[in-house]
Length: 101
Length: 175
Image (cartoon, rainbow over all chains, first blue to last red; front, side):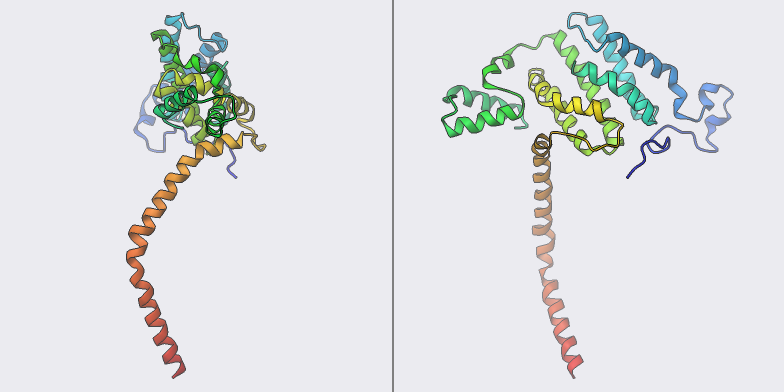
């Protein structure tokens, strides 16, 4: 049985020892963990909370925005920035609620 | 039941048949349609046109499904992956089919949101899961059969070889 509670179980972004980005002075580059994009993750979550599980058909601007936010989420997820179970759970609830209200 | 054409064929068949459920063929088709959340009484909904606005929302939903599917895959949640993949296929194949997909998957999605992240046994609708998994299993069996026919059978001479060797081994042992 896979222990999903363990923070290292799920595939996630990590800079290994000796990675050239670790030598960079800017914290954005040299942060080695998957929580590097936590502000973007917060923004995505906030967007779905504000949607309130509803997509209004006529509100094209908001639906366009949602589509772009989702694209961002997809990239972050596949690149391993949602690397822990807690992060997954945070975003899955609002997603399912919006998918099928 | 996986392709759009098949769905259309079935809907047209139902329209042509007596749907009083006395006809065994009609009964079979209606049962199949019920299984994917579509009843003959509501089938006219299918023909609603897909507007650009609706298409935009459906694209968002498809993207949500991709993300959810990814999370399922990394969590090795095979059953839910199977359901979501089928839902995604319907959403992406044609806008109208999403109407079916909603009904079909609603229960599974509810279960998914309840059980995601918990270790307790998942209470999926196993009948649906089996229906969705059946084509995959058929494909697998097809591949397996292909391996047997194309690889194992031509190696049949090995059986005769081993028979020959073993008979000589027994003879030598007896001597």
